[in-house]
Amino acid sequence: MTSQVTVRMARELKKASIRNEAPIWARLSEYALKPSIARRDINIGRIAQLTKDGDVVAFPGKVLGTGTIGHGITLFSFGISGRAAKKVEDAGGRLLTHSQIIEDRPTGKGVVLLG
Image (cartoon, rainbow, N blue to C red; front, side, top):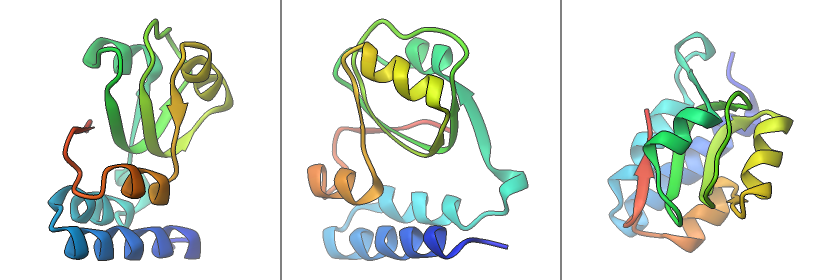
């Protein structure tokens, strides 16, 4: 069963997609409503390999703390471990909620969707 918080997030992402003509938010909305067994996990070390300094990244799953990241990124994910969050912030990055990333990048331009 999907939590009410997840349903609300998916609804807001879908509305932002329609309002801003941004298909990335619709795609994230679809991922949010998938069963938890279908959701993905990624280690912070893998994100470090796939990104560069200053990237804005959206990951439709949970970010785990294995590995290191040596550059600052802006990250939105459905879930993040405490260790991964600390590593992102220690590297000069920041974490965003779904509403913050929509506000920062309404059209989704420049957002890297991993997964």
